[in-house]
Structures are given as C-alpha cells and as structure tokens.
Length: 99
Image (cartoon, rainbow, N blue to C red; front, side):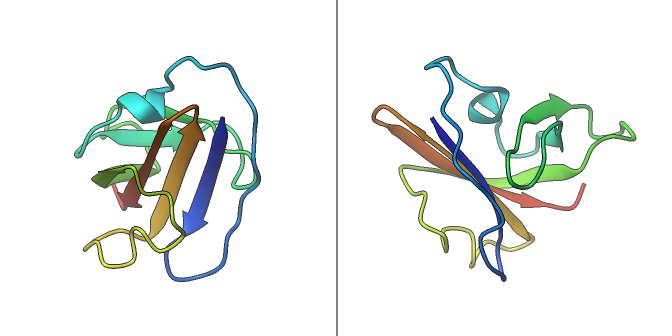
C-alpha cells in the first residue's frame, strides 16, 4: 500500500509505506468526515475522529476514486492537502480542508 499526504499548492511531503491489504480508516472516510494524523507528513496514519474533537486536523471536502496524481485536489474548493492510498487495484485521493 502506498500512502501520501501532499500539500495541494506546494511540493510532495510524503513517503511510501507498505501495509497489509486491509481497508484503512482513510479509505472508509467520506465527504464531511474529520481526520487526525497519528503518523507524520512523511508517514501518515489518518484516523477518523469527531469534527468537534480537539485532535481533528482535517475535514474531507472531496473523495476522488481512481486518481492519485499530485494535482488531483488542486481545483477542489476548500482543499489545502491531498492524501492518497494505492494498493492492489484500488486507489483514491482525499482532498482535505480545514475542520
């Protein structure tokens, strides 16, 4: 599995990680969900959290199935960070904004 957090308007700030084929909390996230990063920008580990929680860092403003290109979230209103995962034949980007 490859996972990355990208700044939408800047350069890539991430690295690849290989994990099991289980679905992640990020993959199960939908527009409107809030997330916290229990990892780092270089090795992200996004977890769902309540949007009113103090640890909420991001809100999903768009989920794009099948596109993990670095610019996938550039034209998404309110997005400042892109997170993506790729494993097997599955790939998606989360466009993340402020909580």
